[in-house]
Length: 569
Image (tube, rainbow, N blue to C red):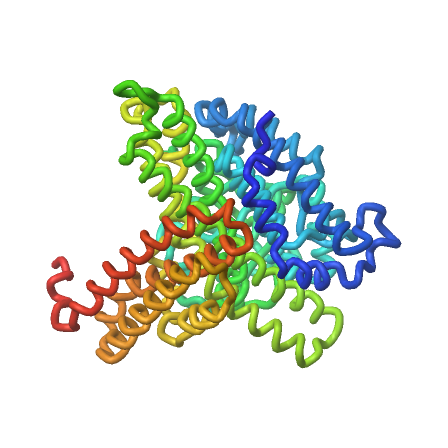
């Protein structure tokens, strides 16, 4: 019986990272829930055992029920009937199975019916689900929108809405509009307070809304009359039970067919303010998007794992010229690099999620009591680290996901172009990962300040001090040389003091930073478990070194005077 968790030991390895000790300590508050809830852990080992068991359950559901339904869901898709969405039959069965297994509201406190899980094991669950059906993963994992409501909503909203999500209701975040895609500061959905109704009324159109007919929506809308920028936007909670929002249509997409992407029409839809006015984009959407980007990074890793599985299995079975094609260098070169990218991207994803866990737990504690000076310092440190790694995790994993599915189809040859092989579905599903929740280009915009302010370089230099096994010290030295090239390229761009030049070089610099950081994370993993990661760190070192040289050459040979060669009139 397939199990997406136990079939891949790398996940359990990431779960048992040393930082989990601190994460559990903060999340469980000295295990204070054990006297009130019979499913609350008694100590650290009990908590880790809980996470492992839930991951096992999720992995089995993903590897059986969700995987078995995936092809049918892809073919059937959701239906648009009477201004409402009706899920594909397989999607409905998947949701029912997840609810019965108690896999909703995973990160929410137990007092609301949640499991009080850290972000890290929840993110692993998202990866497991996406490895079988990325479209269903969108529907199920949007439960993490409740994190934003928990963080910024009031106690009354907590008590009314969070238990519903923990019980299995669905969520969406309604941000994009026909004329406001990436440029969310120009959102124009209008929010007007009605004294007569005693609530806010929303009017306008939202487009490209994932799971747009969900039970609860977080909506970005313009609350301040006469404004045209982000300072006039607020966040609202819309409850489908109140009515007033109709689904105009479901988009016909290249992939993720099980996930309904909707155009919504708001007509005096009753809603309530979440948090304070004017902070919808400036504060709340930024928090919402960072969580969503971590989710897409997990989805990307899940698809990458599935693509590698398909490519490896086909290469072992397919014979040409009298032997299995896995024995041809052209094929095993592709497979080795796919695995190295998968391991490197996963290491980055979970390093980021652990940083998120620590600062989010401290944020939550700060709502109960004043943080101690050392706790404030810790919170600030990990918030900065999480913010710096999130765009790298989303950007690089979504790109690797696309590359791995591309290579997996290539390994299949002509068979990969046929619809009866599942790799074509992974290939189609992968394409959206580098587009939604902020394109790769926007991840560069989010990351570049950590290039220019020295944060990424500081992380590299700290990693260089780590102890690695004797056989890996050569790779560690090579990683240092790569960081030196990165530092030189950054200095070259900063010295030019030219914004268009800076912007043109930005993606090259960000990818250099990501390559070096991921190599260091693989060095850590390979030192801890050479059998599991030894091959990947050696393959990735060769790949990263070549990538660093390529980007370094591009940046160092470019000057502001060359910009016109790149501008297309």
